[in-house]
Image (cartoon, rainbow, N blue to C red; front, side):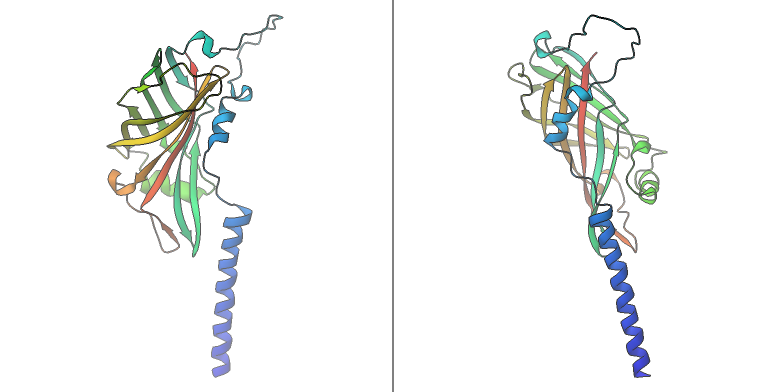
Length: 244
């Protein structure tokens, strides 16, 4: 009888070890979470390759001039499809620490600049379009967590104009603090966060992230028996804007 119990105990330990090892291998090696958006992404989004392709199919021998800061930055700038917005949440999956990351390129928004002052900005995200590496996580996110059917969008609106000081030079990083209203899950909160921006090739790029406490927005913690989720997360973004 004792031998049988020992064999059962050993079998349980082996199975648990295999499951844990499999999860560890999957989350750390085979399918690790995407890295945090950073200044490399900001540089890439204002590079030549990130510019939206022309829809003009007519050939022309005359080169198309590239817009630069010399033409002035005053005006309205619209978000392009190169923009990326998403979430990052700490998870414990079967005892293994990892992160859940979801992103979308479906962003609508604009900047309004007058000489060297950013007067206003707003961007809106289509919640249902946010996708991660897990269809089960996506289903939970758009359903029980964010209730996209009731609250289909998330919105940020700048409340305090930002003084740039001077017209930025090509590829110059500009660091500022943005203060505004963030609306998630039908709840609006005042937020303040740092952003880094640069302009090149007729594109303004903006990089930043906003710390989110789920309870502040009436979002229930989605933890279950297998996955434990933190009470906070990160809304991260790198946005591209072209002059209207």
